[in-house]
Image (cartoon, rainbow, N blue to C red; front, side):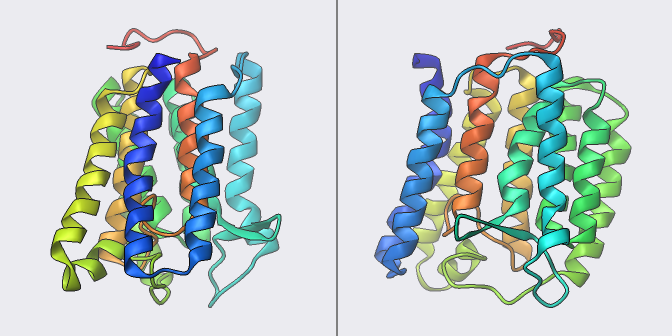
Length: 274
């Protein structure tokens, strides 16, 4: 339990800072309630979810998560030719924010299939199109390469960079208040508040990279994915994950952080917990 508290802190710092921002900035009360409920669900996942055991089970989970990335292309909703979301229980969730953090963990744990897993996610990002997901794939590949020096991840990162640029040209939508480009918009009116939110994201990044109870590849993959999503929100109209309104990334990272602390059913790596 004590080890899992580090994972909880990595999520809690930006989410609670973001909820404080939503309250102070006058966001609709429903935004606070939804983010709060998502955070409670994420806490339960981190602290209480049972171990997911068995290589076969984990690879089935990987396939299911990849399929979730493609669901919006089959079901919509579509907006100006863009499909990145699916509906669940009356809520609209961003498929990449829900599924990709877990895929980053599974890819980091599955050395043989890490590049194909990331390329499958990148294909979904290109078809939707979703530059934020593409950048998350790119930075996950960079994080994994930094941890493992697997040359196969270099072309994955390169392809993801160009795919993200192409998706950015085709897939930009108007920024929604309290959702997209939170730091950029807040910096124009309240630079100190923007700095505080940015520091909460930086703290989360550092905790993911160095403090959660997981092997180095998992830590660097998760930190890389957070960096990629956050970078997209700085350069274009994409959600400011964890600090802005949105249940999907809170649930996605909560479920992802529930995986590494339980160990892995894949063959152990030499870099385990270094």
